[in-house]
Length: 87
Image 1 (tube, rainbow, N blue to C red):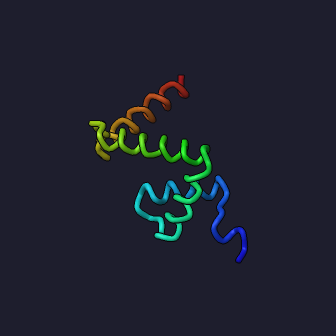
Image 2 (image 1 turned 90 degrees about the vertical axis):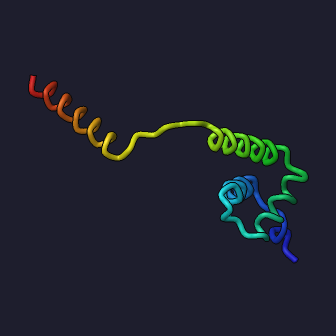
């Protein structure tokens, strides 16, 4: 059995952590991630911060612009830019 079979790098663990956050990681990847979290404090810290960020975003009451509002702002900005370039 190769050493790489179970042990993963920090970068790979971070990628799997991101995938797991959105429910895209396989059960094998999640197992490898949990194994890495057991002994790697860097990955553990990354995972903790990633979870905290996701929870904060989910609980925030952020209101985004609708597409038509964003388009109006973009066109107004473009008009102002063309006016400034012509002057």
